[in-house]
Every structure is written in C-alpha cells, then in structure tokens.
Image (cartoon, rainbow, N blue to C red; front, side, top):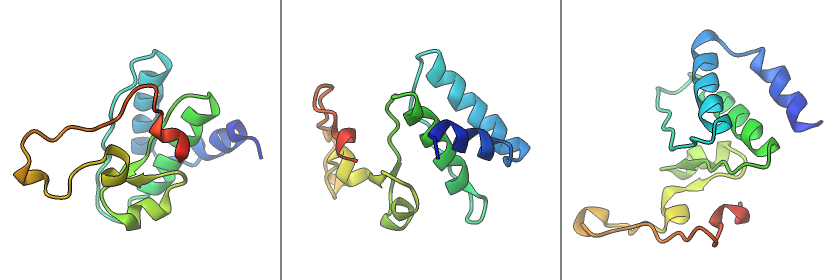
Length: 114
C-alpha cells in the first residue's frame, strides 16, 4: 500500500484533538519550519497511532522524521524509532555532565540508519 494512501485512510480515523496536533505538525513541516515536537499523555490515548501517521506523512515526502523515545518499550511501538540515548549519543549520567551536547553532524545523517 502506498504511504500516501495510508495517511489519507488513517487521518479520517483521527479524533478532533489528534487532528489538531496532526495539522499543526504538518503545517510546520510543509512551510519549512520543522521543529522538535514532544507528545506526552497517559497510556491508552492512541499516541502511537497519531505519531505513526505523522511519521508516514513526513517520510512519504522524502523529508526527515525522527521518532525518539526515552524508553525501549515506546521505541518498539514506532517504526524506525530509537531511544534518545542512541540517537543523540547522550551520556547516561547527564545530570553530572553540565556540558553535554549531542554529537550529530548535519552531513552524518544518523537518521538514515533507521
């Protein structure tokens, strides 16, 4: 099934709140603004459904979409996602390292591995 068809079919299944979030992120990407989007809510709120559609939408346009989670369980639910530690090369004891930075180079494209 073509990615665009998956998006069209699943957008119709979104509730109002999901559609608002989807439209907000889609607009930011389409105008070239991009950004970091953090989605947090309690379990059972269909976050995986929404995030999966957003990832497919962005990737179907050959744009970059990284799904990063803090725990491996969340990562296992999203296609092509990784933990924040592995993607951003974060030190495990970040509270003791005040100068910690992410070691990602623009040309390195760490997301291409995922």
